[in-house]
Amino acid sequence: MKGKDRVKRTKKGEKKEKSNQGKVVQVIPAKQKIIVEGLNLRYKHVRPKKEGEKGQRIEYPYPINVENVMLVCPKCHKSVRVAYKLLDSDLKGRKKIRICRKCNEAID
Image 1 (cartoon, helix red, strand yellow):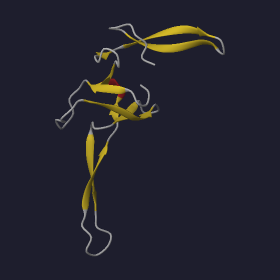
Image 2 (cartoon, rainbow, N blue to C red):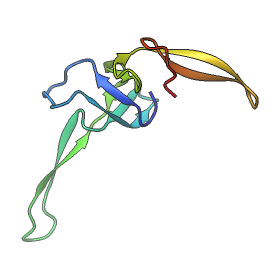
Image 3 (spheres, one colour):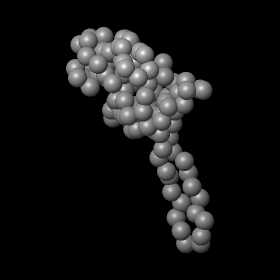
Image 4 (cartoon, rainbow, N blue to C red):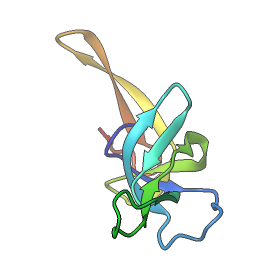
């Protein structure tokens, strides 16, 4: 997964969200997790700091395991597995691109 990819959740979470698709905000490769905009939202309760101020609940996205999401192809708009293809380039030898397995179009 890369940043700004559109992904679809394959497993249901604890809460039933309105949508099961979103855009990748951040990738955490060390933990094999990603943060998706609008999915797996949690609340953080903030206490009032000054007198007369109200406390509030801040909603923020929580990381999801990479195994529980699939990439959505921008061409055919279906959730797909990704194939890789090596292309010859002039500068560094070979370049690896991602390809949709359903429509055989380049994703990058």
